[in-house]
Length: 209
Length: 219
Image 1: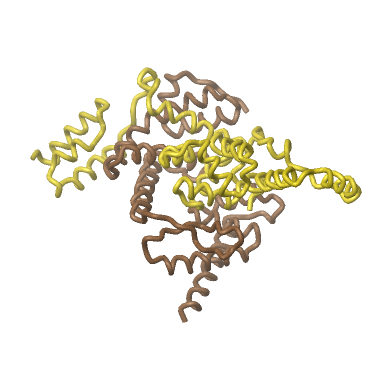
Image 2: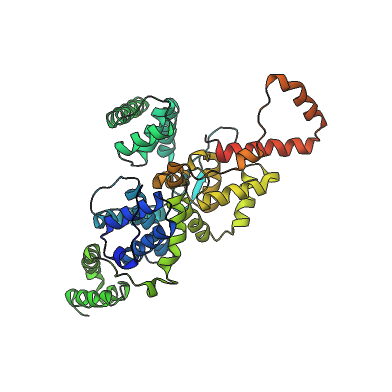
């Protein structure tokens, strides 16, 4: 793969998407110094904006810096994983708002305790204990049981879809991680997740009877 | 009190001069007007082109300190763990050595503390394949760091596996240490090896296998 190294000045005149493409190409061709320079220019350009936007909604400096760093990692990840083809400013806005919302939501649920599993190791998923989570525990068990009942590739599709990844990215990842399984398409992903949702709905309806 | 529009205009000038902290400006308007000012500032920040490159200002800045963990994440096979784990650890005010002690205890492998240390180091440096790390490890880490397993798993899945995609990063602990299961023909030899081992050694071997399975064997 050809790689054309650029000066700081040239890099700083690139727009965000061109800069990300450059960082990606530098990484893939082993030009670590160029990758870091490009990354530095991108982070320098956008980080303070992200920090200032978070400052509008979050009080603690420690929390602000932490959130800003994660927003930056999420933004780069979305671009590198090919999950977002739109404008960078929109992506930054979306991720910043989501991170702030997640932060406030997690703060409103203060303490976490292990979910009783009945298993040997006693290490189950975590839930918050300061609210009534009876329904959540039941739902968690229903969802977990339903996922466990799936084949390896279908289980992976559902788990990845639950994290919010788009179908294309889910199919790509499953095909990469499980090359021996039948090839997965966007349509397969939609079908599997729809069937999974239907199954959960049926189980919930039955449990309410 | 000054009007929202006036304060907003002042903020724009201040931000362009590099003083973009909005909080002092929010404090200058009545409480009932703060949301409106915050919204104006947010819209403005969402459309500005960002800071001009300044290598002198960059040197030693907060932004420069982000480059190392972001580079590890981009190059590695651990998703955004190189960014997220050190940050969570700092927030939880837990030193790495203390975290590793607690992790080894929680995983029930106290004799393999150094191996756990090596794996955890790899998670922070992007050299441990995130898909190999079991839920049990993430549950234990989550309890120590105050984070949920799913969130940790999700951040490990991000970044598209830079090094993994190119196949140029391999964590060698498994190849170096794990005992390869012996074939049936070697069963006699296996028995004599087992007979010659002391119980404490056998226990340590078993814990080592457990550690490798937990950090490199997936679920």
